[in-house]
Structure formats: structure tokens, C-alpha cells
Image 1 (cartoon, rainbow, N blue to C red):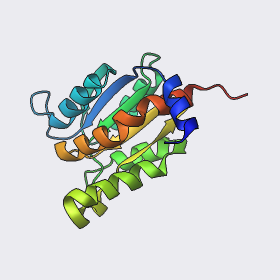
Image 2: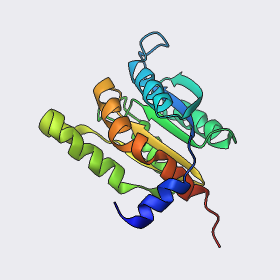
Image 3: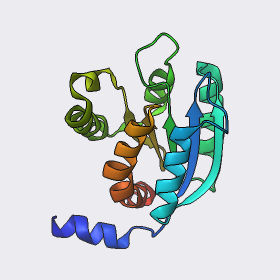
Amino acid sequence: MSESVEKHREAAPEHVRVAILTISDTRTPENDTGGDVIQELMEEAGHEITGRSIVKDEPSSIRTTLVDLLANSGVDAIITTGGTGIAARDTTYEVVNRMIEKKLDGFGEIFRMLSYEEIGAAAVLSRAVAGAVGAKFIASLPGSRNGVRLAVEKLLVPEISHIVFELKKRAD
């Protein structure tokens, strides 16, 4: 690891305030396994879950909920699960991609590479995406528990504090 990355990680906050949004026509609080995995892994890493909700896979509902979460001063990052595939009802990518101001292309690229190692060519069906909306971070993950676990363990837990630190830096 480079010296500057290490210094930035050391300066990053110890915990990030994360909102979890599950996007699904079928998930309920009782069977929201993707949301459960996000919460479990982020809390184990020392981050705070500031809210958790489920919305139907309707673009207007997704957007309204995200706008509210982004306006919440108690939220540093939003992690969504669901709606990133290519089925007709999968609209999360379209909504989130339009909202992102600074896209982190490497997030989706690396997620698909890691997925390929686990599930083979089916990884091309994922439209996982992440980026910044103002000084807030948003990551949209697939709905599968295994896909969520992979993204959170390999990408978000190691870097979310650093990402939030960078986004909160004031421009000179």
C-alpha cells in the first residue's frame, strides 16, 4: 500500500454513518437478507447504521427515498441492495446513476471482477455502481446475499471510511 493511502486511511473517521436501502417488490423486514448482511458487516467494522428501509422497485419511490437520505445530516453514506440486474423491474441503476455526480468506475469494475471469480460469466449481468452525490457516498449493490457480502467485505469495509474522508475534505 502506498504511503499516501495509508496516511489517508489513518486520518479517516473511525466510523461512518450508513443508511441501508433495500429496493425490492418482494422483500419485507423479515426476509431482507441483503440488508441484514450489510448491517451485520458494517456494524462489525465499527460503522453506525442510522436507518434502514425497504422501497418497491419504482423509480419515483427510489429517487424520493434517496433524496431524503442524502438531505439527512446524520447520514454519510447510503448502501442500497437490489434492483441492479437487467430485468424489466430493475431500475435502481438508472435512478442512482443519474443522481451520482462523481462516479467511482472502479467500484463496479472490481465488483464484477470479484464476482466473476465466484460465479463466472453471470457477473456481466451486474450493474453495481457507486459514487458521490455532493459530500455523500452511495453504493448500489445487487440483491443477492452473496453479492452483497462480496461487495461489503472486499470493497466497502476496507474503503468506506477513506471515501467519506475524501468527500468531506473542503475544496481550497
